[in-house]
Image 1 (tube, helix red, strand yellow):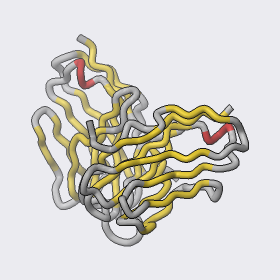
Image 2 (cartoon, rainbow over the protein chains, first blue to last red; image 1 turned 45 degrees about the horizontal axis):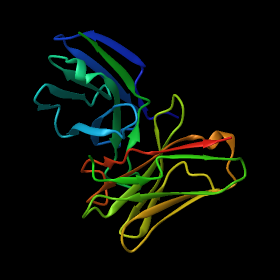
Image 3 (cartoon, chains in turn blue, red; image 1 turned 90 degrees about the vertical axis):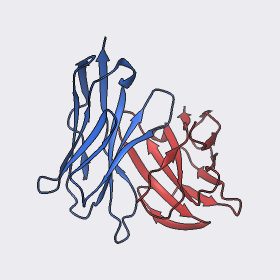
Length: 114
Length: 114
């Protein structure tokens, strides 16, 4: 049972354009969401997060949008740069109850072409 | 550099053997998490320790065990190894007990079981 789903295994975008990575979740108890970026041979690196009390969080070129009614979040990268090419993982957690641990999606591989 | 150190980087061993993976968290971090990433899979949560005590278990096999020592470093023990245990094993740390702060990941240990 996959509670966090990233349905696009890969995405290719031209440099300077917008990259939109999507993530869906099924557990309504999730109230904290994060995006991680991973380069080959390295561990995941935290990128941006959002709490369920917000619907948008922005940090430079990165913006995360949360639609709680649809159980959907997305990461927008504007403008995309070749250095953004990496695997992006969506993750979620529930602060209440025993499920205080991050559940990850399978990742989306972003390729930004010059 | 996340500040989380994992050793060894690579490990090759035979089926039926036992190995120990080691993790040193960032300075000041009390929580240590272990995740497994198999081919084409997302990060699967294994186990969480906070200040020496087990806090949560995920999809961890009975052949696997972990502990966190008084100096806060952690070890993941994998025994009776099978071919399917070949994977990347990541350790992550955070200051807090639950996920209202990001995790910081090490670069992982790549385990190959032959």
